Image (cartoon, rainbow, N blue to C red):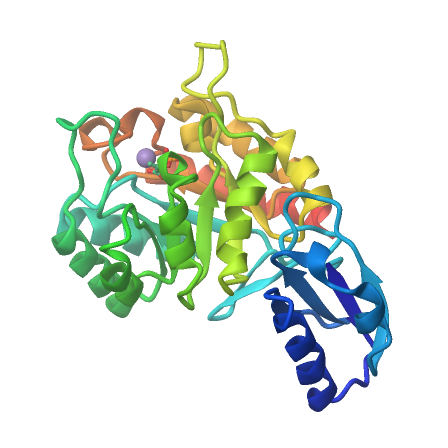
Amino acid sequence: MLILLNLKTIRNDINLIKEAIIKYNCIPHEIPGERKLAIGVTGPTNLINEEEIRKMKSVEEVIRITKKYKLVSREMKEEDTIINIGDSKIGSKDITIIAGPCSVESKDQIFDIAGRLKEMGINFLRAGAYKPRSSPYSFQGMREKGLQYLDEVKKEIGMHIVTEVKDTETIPLISEVADVLQIGARNMQHYSLLEKVGKINKPILLKRGMAAKVEDLLLSAEYILAQGNYNVVLCERGIRTFETSTRNTLDLNSVPVIKKLSHLPIIVDPSHGTGYWDKVSPMSLAAIACGADGLIVEVHNHPEKALSDGSQSLTLEQFEKLYLKIKEIAPIIHN
Ligand code: PEP
Ligand code: MN
C-alpha cells in the first residue's frame, strides 16, 4: 500500500499516520524522494481500513500496490533511486564503472591493479576477499588478510571498495572496509543474509542468481528494503540457459525490463555474464547502450596467473581501451 501525502505535511501528521499503520501490525516506510511525500506500507495490508487512512489529515491518496514486490516497485516510487557514495552517484546520468580482479591475491597484485585503475579515473575497486566458489578445492579468497589489503588500498589510493559478503558472520568485519557489500549470485536467495544486510547502513550490490527470474531478483531486493536499507543496486550477471558457447547467457533484456518495474539502479557484469575476456568489451558496450546504470568488470594485471576467473578478466590495457569507448558512448545514451 502507498499513502501519498500533501507536500506540506508536517512531521506530527506523518507520525500520526505511521502510528495508525502500526496499529494494524503493518510497517510504514517513509519513501525517500524529492518530488513526492509518501509512506509505503508492508505487512498484512489487507487488514487496514483504507477509509480510516484516507480520512486522515494530509492524506491525498491511498493506492494498493498490485505487484508481489512493493518497496522496490516503480508503483511505490516513480523517480529513479540514486545512491550517493562520496562524490559518486550510482543510478544518476553518470555511468558507474566498478573494476578490479575477481579476488585479492596479494598486496602487490591489488595495489598494482588499483593504482593503475585510479590513474585511469576509476573510483570503484571490486575484489573478493571471501569467495564463494563452486568447488571446495578452489581458491577460497585471502579472507581477513585480503580485507586488510583492501582497507590499505582504500586509505592509500582512495577508492570505494566493493567486496562480497557470503555469510552473516562476516557482515560486521566486511562492513568496516566495504563501501558497497556485494551479495553474489549463489546467495541471491539466502534470505537470512538479505535480512541482515537490510539492517545495516551500507549500499548493497545484489547480483541476479544464475537460475533466477527478474521477479525473483526483485523479491530478493525487497527483503533488503523491507528491513530499512533502501540503498540497493541490482546486477545482471548472466543466467544459465541451454547455450554452452559462453559461461552464462547475459540477459540484457533484464535491463529495460527492470528499469520499467523498479526504481533501483541496475548495473551489468559482462565478465561472469560471458566467461571469456574477448566477449567482455562488446557486451559492456551493449549494456551501456541498453540503459544500464553501470558495469562491474573483472580486470587483472596478469590474467594468465589469476587464482580465479582469469579467462574472463581483461588486462589493464584492454580495460583502458574499453573505458575510453564507454566514456564516448555513455553521454549519448544517458542524456
Ligand atoms: C564475482 O563477482 O566474482 C562472483 C563470484 O560473481 P557471481 O556471484 O555473479 O558469480
Ligand atoms: Mn569472479
